[in-house]
Image (cartoon, rainbow, N blue to C red; front, side, top):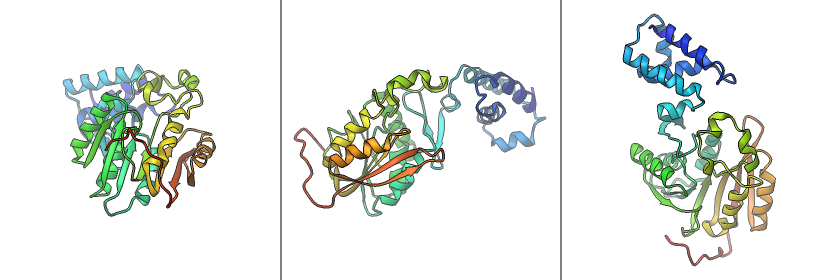
Amino acid sequence: MTVAELLALAAARLAAVVADTSPRREAQFLLARALAVPESWLLAHGDARVAEGAAAEFLAWVQRRARGEPAHYIVGSCPFWGREFAVSPAALLPRPETELLLERALALAPHRQPRILDVGTGTGCLAVTLALERPGAFVVATDASAEALALARHNVRRWGAAVHLACGDLAHHLQGGWQVVVANLPYLPSATLAQLPLEIRHFEPRLALDGGETGTQVVRALVEDLPRLLAPAGCALLELGQGQAEEVAQHARSRGLEELERIVDLGGVERVLVLQRQQEGPAPSNSGATG
């Protein structure tokens, strides 16, 4: 079969499952990965014949996508901040919205050996990018999932990033003194998970989605610990769901933290909340914390 014939066949098979996007665009993405060529090459070589093995692999991928599996899980990688990261159902796929958090974190991170903590690292895309963009930084990334941490470790090694990984619930097991804390934690209310699109509901890890009854349970638990974790004048950047910024900001203020800003995404959602610890005053202790 030719490139054009395969794309037409795949687009027809994908029409039902990806109606909210472009079936042909998804077909192009998968075929380009199967052939290891740029998508632009496909557009210029519609009459090119595709080897039988590559065509079979592509059509198998299309079948998986037609059952709802996210395309990036199928091909095993996803872009973030200009780099490709290995992905699997052990962790959420990197989202464009998280680049808003990263951009602000880079602006806040000192250029000279900053101490950066990534809580709930998932694929490790935030921690790896921060380490690469801030050479000399001391970066630690945590996750409660051993499977997600193994994926993050793969990405750390793939990019040669100086990131230390730790398995544990949030950051209760770590000492404080962090100049920047970033966190993309579960923030969906439990009751809404059943209404999520099939590709999220059936394929992405529930542990990384379920934020409890209000969606803010996990985030609030981290906020409780931020006065201890942050260095004086240190900042925390939290990714949140729709309508959660005010609740989390109020909770942060009750813990003595200052709200610096709310970053709004392209959909009008207050997606990132930036908090800061006061410059003076001792942090609460946690005798169980370790380095």
